[in-house]
Image 1 (tube, helix red, strand yellow):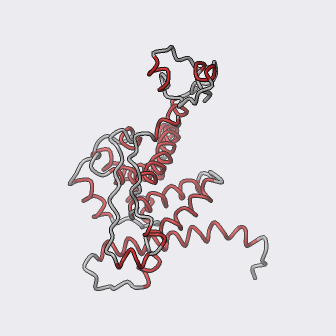
Image 2: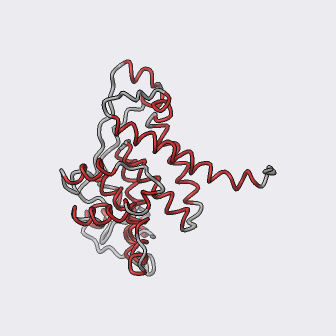
Image 3: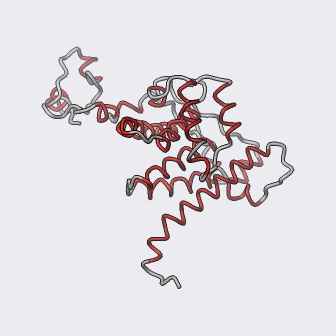
Length: 264
């Protein structure tokens, strides 16, 4: 999207806000964009630069990555990030009934061969709250919707859902959200991209899953897993998510290796 004509004429930086940029709004000047520069469809409008401006500033402690030992010794903690009410997730799923229908279809199909989400924990998460209360659960439900749609009408609507999911991941990253639910959503998104031949996005998403899992310290937690732990359900989800990352990563790398090595 090109800058507005006023900013271009004045050689000022244009933030390309719609319907008027900030400079034109502040100076009370008519804001007009060049013909053909406006988004041609709702999808393109959703991808405008202004979509991320409402995301809160990331307060994630850098020490978590620079020196994990110092982070642990100082008893530092990661604040739970939040998305604004205008999050793209909330524009797609609006009720717990809708999430329940999507989840029922998912657990009756995809979950049977890709069991990375605990059914009871998932249902309990959204039944005791609202869609607005836990954006991550709503995002996970959207990813379930990607994999559970079969009819022609549902498939036609998936493009918008998929774009919203990709935007939500960017918003979550900006907000410093780091938890197992987002990793599960990433894994389901990677699965959808693989199944629909969306490359190189699938390749990159799987790599993102691996990085995200390591950031969650899953590789170390799995090695030190105490089966007598009080929160066994959480540990089991982490265990399955880690193995899902490994499986998808091997699937991603295998075609490259098969061109180099002869498999006997």
